Amino acid sequence: MPTSLSQPSVKKNSCVVVGLDPHFKLIPETIKQKFSGSQKQVLEYASRVILEFNIQVIDLIAPHVSMVKPQIAFYELYGWWGIWAYTETIQYAKRRGLIVIGDVKRSDVPSTAEAYADAHIGKVSINHGVEAPFDADAITVNPYLGTDSLLPFIRTAQKYKKGIFVLVKTSNPDSGEFQDILCGEKKLHEIIAEKTHVWGKDFIGKQGYSAVGAVVGATFSHEISILRKIMPTAYFLVPGYGAQGATAKDIKYCFNPDGLGAIINASRSILYAYTVSPWTDKYGTSSWKNATEEAIVKMNKEIRNMLEQ
Amino acid sequence: MPTSLSQPSVKKNSCVVVGLDPHFKLIPETIKQKFSGSQKQVLEYASRVILEFNIQVIDLIAPHVSMVKPQIAFYELYGWWGIWAYTETIQYAKRRGLIVIGDVKRSDVPSTAEAYADAHIGKVSINHGVEAPFDADAITVNPYLGTDSLLPFIRTAQKYKKGIFVLVKTSNPDSGEFQDILCGEKKLHEIIAEKTHVWGKDFIGKQGYSAVGAVVGATFSHEISILRKIMPTAYFLVPGYGAQGATAKDIKYCFNPDGLGAIINASRSILYAYTVSPWTDKYGTSSWKNATEEAIVKMNKEIRNMLEQ
Image (cartoon, rainbow over all chains, first blue to last red; front, side, top):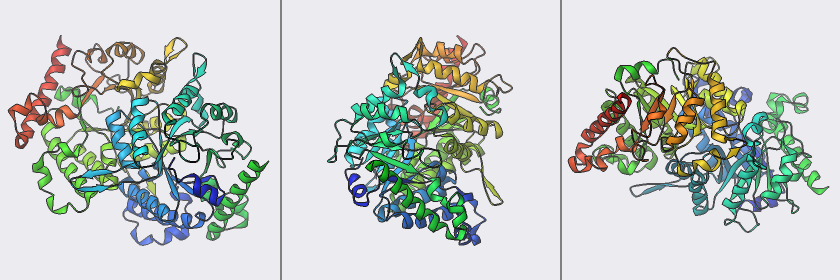
């Protein structure tokens, strides 16, 4: 992780990362109405609505959390206009002092992985000009292709003081199909966890955590304790809280005894809190901001309470 | 694969797919000079150069091949401008009658995978407008997350008569690290190959091949024969020819006895033929088109000769 990661987390006393996953249908009408004149170009219109929604969400949550995680798939859905909105979202979040984890789950053979790494957490040079195309602080990566496919990401992270999270055990129902397969006496995801520890061991920051973290689904609490031991210095990026069903209790073992080491993600349950209980009865669409703010305060509190027990 | 895939392959008597992997430094100066006035905006400038190069390459190769494969990493490298160039490249290639395989290697949990699938081979609806954001004919996908992560891609491929290629055995040196790991009596990539056959068995087109294909690196000829038996109805998308070292002999067993079933990729050895032997001595930069055209004709011939033996 970026060496700066723990600092704001400690300052705001929050280990929550809000997933900026724009679902067009769930974005409040009040935001859509701002752009009603430009509906002819579907992809441009949707992307402008998404960016405006993200800006308002970021303004709301910035006092309460230190990290956001845009999921690039929900931006690619609107073509290059969507990627424009993704880029602007990252820039705005960073201007508001937030750390940005780009959830891109990229992976490829080494020369191609290098291009992905430069694009998302590095820089590109053209003649005498240098640009950071997306400039996220960290990204997620897929390990199926092996060590040489991950080294470009690790090297780029090191060069620019950024981070990566390796998919170790994902939160979807079928994640066990290959990830839990027994290879001798170990499960595949345990072998990948061991490698993740090795990939990251030379890149430990001041807080004692590595630039190479791991994605570990909150929906599998048994596996979490084992993985915490295999990767003691890895930040765990933990999806599955809220809409995917995991609770504060489920994620307890993602943390080290120092109360650090885990970044808990929630997306839909925060962004669209106004559509679900208990907020939907309390607030209408026009008061969606109150619902989102209460939801994030509640989530922070639930996790703090669990950690203090 | 799109049901239309075999038709042009047979018509042009070529199973080659040219990888449109733009490496800015290798693009001939004559193309870059066209855009010399707009160098201030690095990402826009690079993307305009890339698109112009791709258009010229597509015009050159269209009489000789039926497929192109843009690798999206080399476009993401230039941010949303790069994705604009990727989109325009796909549209131009399709207008020239080529089949386009988007090499995106996407993968995520089901709801996110659905967004990727709609983006790359499907459509998105906003209010009353419908758009196909990228509209590739097929894409590559990563299987590490399991069946439920791939079903959205398979369903979308079926709905829009498109195709996917599952990464089974990749061409990079470390691909064996996890992909060759023994799980009981089988290697992991063999288990994934068996699943790939199952995922595709209900989507067989007129030529006898499935909409669910497999990426199988040409650099591992021993594995190829085994995989050909496990997945008899899968198109193999075979990287590694040319710059990565594989020859016509290495790819022989990618094909079924009918002479079909394999799509052989070459990128750098065609696009930048003017920089390598024997073309670099014969042609200067200004004659790069002659080098590219001769290289593609030679590659087609080598594979045809191998198949006729």
